[in-house]
Image 1 (tube, one colour):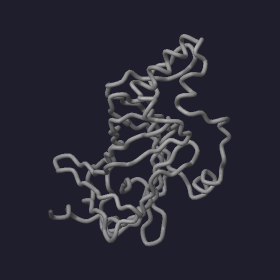
Image 2 (cartoon, helix red, strand yellow):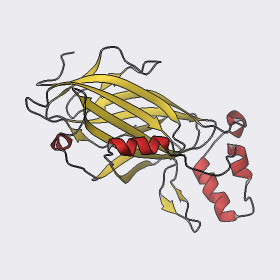
Image 3 (cartoon, rainbow, N blue to C red):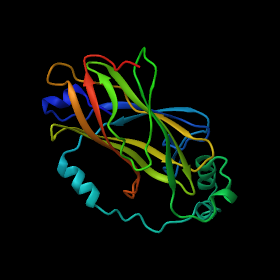
Length: 246
């Protein structure tokens, strides 16, 4: 939730990064069948290679203003009933949906994603658990990172009602009013289930030096392919010489 030292140099980066999600019935892209549908077996630890995309201000504006026509939307029950005669497609849907209780999801078209927990992890240190305020705006300083340290963001979330497609995490960071970092990480597509998903973003490093230390403001969002926002957090954090004492 901070930013990488390289971004302070004004360079644009698009590096391969590793992302992992764990859940009993995780539904990201894995191997493809003859219909071109990616799917994973439930209960597996998934590691997929994604690209961290560092966007410009104009990229953000274009994306927010862009409407993608995805065609008609169906309830989860309707999606499962479609193309029942296609054996291969039926098997893929069963694998994708896992042990979904159709009686519990009802006839709701819109998926619901609830972020349950957020934590910052750093090697050799206890996790820093971040409280999630109801209004998305933590009061005061949300957390402190040590300069030159390695860290990653870990979170759990739950999906209800319908499949959420193209869930992604975005982050923008400013210092003294100037944008110093912007990143987007694709998380994947997930079916509703009772058990929460757990996801950890690729490890990053905080910048170091006198010009890197200080206070930052940031905005993090969880959005899907329809640009529906499930959580937006506006917060401040510090980069200091050392970790904040407990």
